[in-house]
Length: 130
Image (cartoon, rainbow, N blue to C red; front, side):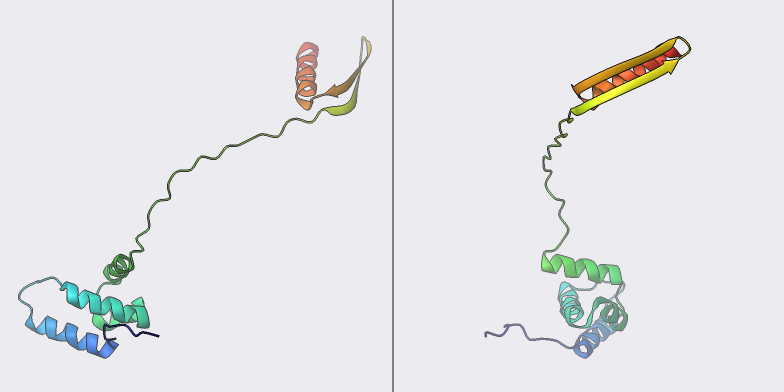
């Protein structure tokens, strides 16, 4: 199995590199890309929390650098088309409505009528009676 051509670095070596950079930097110079690459390599082995604490770097910056190095920046999923098909209303085999009021009785028998028809009929009768 071939080994990686880049040598692995330990947390202590990275810590020493960051300390040397802090002692020799001029003003508020940003951390170099080489040092960030070391921090990312160490964080892959040691974890982001421990690495950011030991190297005194911001956790969010290290996390973003790791994601960029891995090419794992979240990309939005391409929009997809989803067709929603409503199931066809199954007709009721048989339904009988019996209504009784002051004026008399009413009996309605429905065969193979969809439930939507029954709902419409009921609403019409209710409105008429009200």
